[in-house]
Image (cartoon, rainbow over all chains, first blue to last red; front, side, top):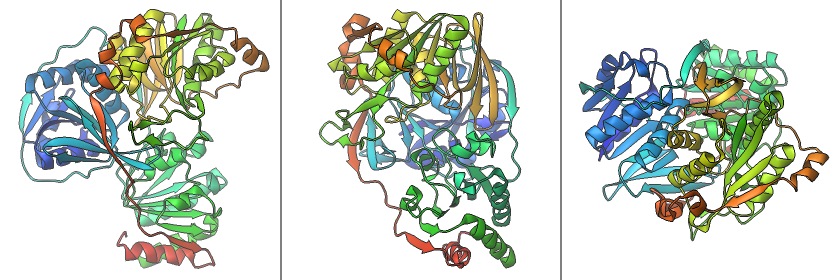
Length: 317
Length: 258
């Protein structure tokens, strides 16, 4: 299988999600990466270390803002040029729009929210947990190219130490694709590791009782070397910034350890964190749904337990 | 200002959702409801109409009984509804759905097309981008606040890294996030009035959409198999008697997570 992987970048870093998908694609066959925007050439060269034999770059100024429609044009050009079997994306706000736009443009099938990709008799098959992860669906495609959006954090980037041959290409843009323009960009800078990159996440929900209680979680996260995340309810209430929101309307995370404090485990939150390696839940309500999908469930008062845990972790160091 | 809002009927939240093993499609036979995050798109359309005048048209694709769910949005204040319903559209994937909707939207000739955040059943959050490409119109998605000013629209888009302020000329396609507003409840007067609002039902042929490009026939994706989800393994449950913090630490140390 010959796959093209869309490598999203932020500043001068390639996103981890795309590199993970690239490593996976390389394990299934021939993988190429594509980076779009000014500076793409230098970034594309880094794809080789994650299994790409080839990396494509388009440096057109029309691709400088992180907008989806010019990227659809560029990818459509590249797919036509290279005749790839599959175009793979790590899910993000931008990538979802690019993938769906490309599907319409190429009349190509798109499967989304995949947690795994396998080959069955040489054909690509995606694994998709559906209906709140109550069922695992095997999905396929009836024609080429096969388009796929992979759930965030499904694959870890694997450094293979190879190098990629970089090829720059020109794209032509549709009249409507460049009509939307970026006016202004506001970055939310959080201290410590971002929740997408953290191996350990300490997350808080309404059970914290007050915005001040987030300081308990920050201390625990600090001691563990992790990041703090929040549920939609508390972000909506203004207790914590949107950039830390985990769930359907926030980020999808998959740390090695997720400590859920005062989180009931509503489906809207569950879909954003169920890919975590180990889930520890602390909640006063023994009937909270989170106890159905955690590994260690602690029924108790987080205001007592979290500071004690922080002390215990600190005393080990 | 003519505003089209794309809405969908989904299984009601109280219905146990299941996939029919025979058709490998979602069982839609139970009670239906308007997709919750579509209400934010309806609300935003009504606010724009209230400020600037115009018409709010609901556009939907679904079975005939979806008309009941559309009535809720009419009761909120939308002016009329267009439901594309056709046996041949059943089992449509993104391609069939987006082409049927795009054709219906072309007929409506709206200045602004609004979508909600994601459907509670398909959960793709991808439809608008495919529709925008088919309509050849600019797109702004994940919009947390929206201003419509004369012949342009500006949306504040939530991303993983913060906010992007994006502007586009009309006509445009906008997908709103559920953070954009708090949808209103229909008033009694609205509910009574909804019954007499125009609800048009059209077939794929009326839109010039070929049946072979819709439904399962036109789908380029397929469901191969259904299975149980991977299990999380054995669960441990602890009631805090003062030693829970120690137990948590022991648990994570045992699994070499620190």
